[in-house]
Structure formats: structure tokens, C-alpha cells
Image (tube, rainbow, N blue to C red):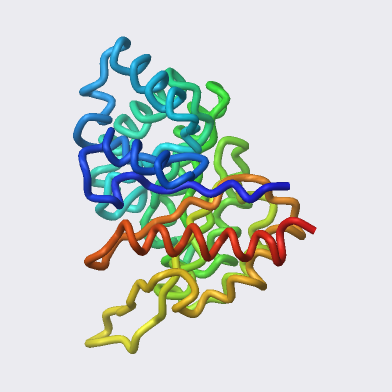
Length: 272
């Protein structure tokens, strides 16, 4: 089975359609664009615009593996902005439905260890609403891993028990922010993983109580990619590995490196 490799086209730092074209030029299989601002903000896309986007991507031989529906801030942990966030996330889910995409990814904020924490309670009360809204449209809201350990995210998802809530597995976030083992985390979250990011990095010493990290090109950080791919294969994952390069002066070169790095591992590990 071929490894499906995509990219977040915004990482090219080009106008969105040029970024999508670049993904096709590089021989990638799909794209996961941001749908929270600019041209792809649902507020800026009419029905015609949505149809045009779908046909444009298809004409390039690509698929949209997911939409990024992350509006930043404290995610679904902040009671002050939760109503706004729910409505905006529903708008992205509607866009996904209109263009035939079945995954929307987002960060929900830091999952606290204490279930009595206001952040936990806010998540527990709000996420089922968007999860059900998505599920009723045949879509999954995939929560991105990090900044908490995988076991803590699983605890929240198990407690909520909503079929529309899944996981966008980012191994680098677990390494860089949570200091967690991304290989072990695959088995912890195996029942929820529906989409993944291909990213790498290292955790740095905390400064004044604040977490520090550094994102690096694939294979140069502390994600054990061979073991990670073996784990993903073992749990039966057959979705996308979407390249995300948020920093660096040469994003296109780093994305090409990531593509080639994954294709090499594909031959060594995935196709056997």
C-alpha cells in the first residue's frame, strides 16, 4: 500500500492556489489548507467559490485530505470565546461538507490533568456539540496532539465518548511540547487517529517556567521515524502523512526533503 503524502500548502508561503499548484508540481498526493482566514475562510467562499476550489484541486490530480480549522488562542479551553469558536468551527465543517472533505483538524488548547479545571469542563461541555455537528454531516473533527501527553488526550476523548471526535496525530508536537514518546502514543490513541502531520523537532529546556522547543526538518529531530511508521502500519493506519513546515528560511526545500525522506522510508518499511 502506497504511503499517502500531503502538505499544508500554506507552508510554501505563497498565495493559496499557487501553494496548491506547487504541491502538485512536487508530486504530492494531497493538501490540507487552512480554512480560517484569507481566500479559504468560509465567510469568503460562495457556493460558486466552493465548487471552483473543489474542481481546481481535482484538476491538479490532488485530494484535500483535511481542512485546518484551528483559530488559535486557547482553543476550546477558554469559556470567554467558546461560543464564537463553536460557530466558526461549524462554518469550517460546513465548508468541508460542501467540498467533499471528511476531516477538519484543530487544536483545542491544553488538556488539564484535573477534571475539575475550568478548561477541562469547557472542553467536555463544548466539544460534543461540534463533534455531533460534524458527525451528522459525515465529517470528523480531529484534535491535534500536543501540548499534553497522549494518555491525557485519550482520557478526555474516552470521557466524552463522541463519535465525531478523532485525532490528528502530530508526533513532533508530542516530542517538542509534551516531551512524550510519539511511538508509544500511537498505540495509546490508535482508536482515534484519522489524520497525521509529518513534522519533526526537539524539546528545549524550559525558560522561566515556559516550554521551549525547536522545529527541525524531518529526520533531524527526536521523532523516531522508522519506529513511528512501523507503529502506524501496525495499527492499520491508511490515511495521509501531511508535511507541515512552520519555520525555516527555505520551506520548499525542506518540504522536498520531507517528501524524499518519507518516500525512502516507504520503500524500507511501508510497502512490504
